[in-house]
Length: 161
Image 1 (cartoon, rainbow, N blue to C red):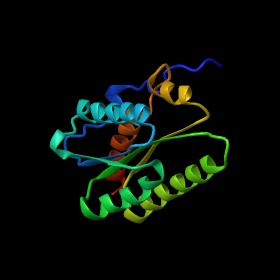
Image 2 (image 1 turned 90 degrees about the vertical axis):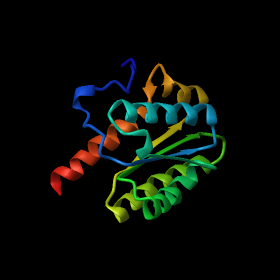
Image 3 (image 1 turned 90 degrees about the horizontal axis):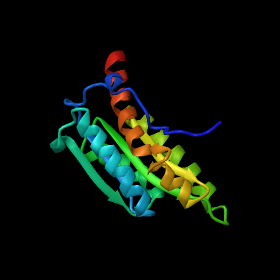
Image 4 (image 1 turned 60 degrees about the vertical axis):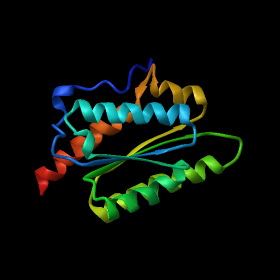
């Protein structure tokens, strides 16, 4: 099966974001990738009605720090959702496995603790090229996907409250 743009979505199926405050936290590590993901997320949120003044954009040193940063942001700035952006590329050691596991579990725990959407827009790839392909390249932009997911999860949360 040939991979295509994995970020294609129906814009009419995305809820209006004009009433939401959304945090976006991006890792500084692998900036060529994370900057593109951050841009995709912010642009998509703005396109779907989130007001610029209702966006909280912050940077952290690396992907591992996303969990604690999301927890701190939810405790102190009270966004409705947080999109966490990072990129971990497989190397020759087990570091990749430890970081990916810790971040996925950490973000899940933060979401449950705060009963708020905490979106995993973290690329976990074997190569830099694979990451670039998912950061605005031929396979889309995971930041865009994170923004759409945040808006859909906020609408879901409202529908069951």
